[in-house]
Length: 85
Ligand SMILES: [Zn+2]
Image (cartoon, rainbow, N blue to C red):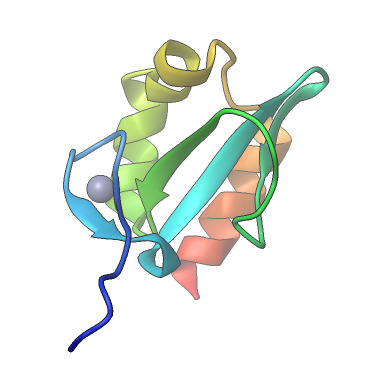
């Protein structure tokens, strides 16, 4: 029997994908952080590992709506680097 992969919804395109194909952001007091391991505690939001989804999520302020905080320019640049790999 195939093991069920947990799916998460992208805040931009609303597609359901395996966690491994997504970037997870977690809201911390100091601001949003990128959760590299997927094990970070706290409220998280997922976005596809995709340049367009990332851009759309930022443009539509999805992180602000989902996590109550907007993404910082510094974190956005870090994520933009990641999705280009
Ligand atoms: Zn997406």
